[in-house]
Length: 521
Image (cartoon, one colour):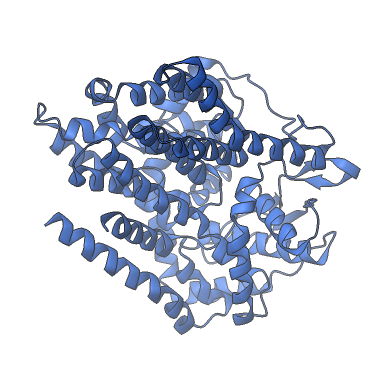
């Protein structure tokens, strides 16, 4: 029951702090694949070049017209434009898209608003499920329920994962499936029940469908399975059980590539290169002021401190986590897009966060370090404070403000100059947006701007609507709280209806919090 209460608590918090929109570029591209699959419209998604008009009054951005590409699609079969991203996120979105279409009847003047609102719950669901699974993984490892609860809450609220409820990136779901692979491995290792090997292969296959780069996690899994097996016949059985679902995911990926780009091994990533000096990439990913994972998730410092104890107690799992970090850093440190783009923290390392916090219960329950508990509390509080402003307001506003200074190196400055770090600057940006939103005249002006954005030209009626939503969404991202219930009334939805939609989540929050409190007492 504790796991269910944790899931309810995290899901309610995430749902109430979700943005309710899908951003341009990667997210819009994957959304169109979901939309097309649901409507039988093929795989081509198109791309429109649109302009967000300058907002010269009311404290709104941009100050100068901002040109945008609605999707990140690339040319493929038949000269059409296709998504270059994995199929997994779009497939996971299909049930939510179907539910969201029912909401469109509530606001017929804004088609596609309902599906986008409901689809924005995918990452809250994935992250809440990750917290739930993290709790159960810690319990399987033999640690007390108290520390299992706190580890799950630490990931859910004290890590850089929380602001990703405002995105539709596939990394949260990828992290869930990598954790499921670890959970399945440990259940198999302890029970030798062959069914867990199937779950292990399915989890790895799902991660591969979400992000083809998840393949870099496979050698580590293969090694620990090899070390844990006892004979060649057993190794062949393990390979068959893990390989069957994993092979299905590989086949689906290759077929998807062939349908889009005419070649099974062509994924559409034509701009990929490994041109970053590796040491610079390592510095950037780990400790830089703008993207360092240890700054965005301070609890990782304590987790690293707990590794010696964890190695003594969970040798195979500690080896697997270490191998995954080596593989991810070796792959992404020299990658030309190692930053992950306009996102909170090092996005490409996000899938490793859940498993990386597993040493926490080891050091917290060890008893030999009196400082572990106070350090955990301090770093958890610091982590929550770091995430909060990026949850409430999309940090793209701060980056747009830096762009408008005219300095061509503005983005590098946010990466490497501590005084320009988003961690420090996001609080001021959030305060500015909340102050504007608190004024009735600014909300009225925002409502007028959203309503005045017309349908841009596009190759299909569905894409015209999508392009309009992209423009409206980018204005919201720059100028309004990233809370769906706060900006939904600006679309013309009655505040009463917005409150009614939020009510079930408040009830779920109370149920989850009450259960956690009773179990902790």
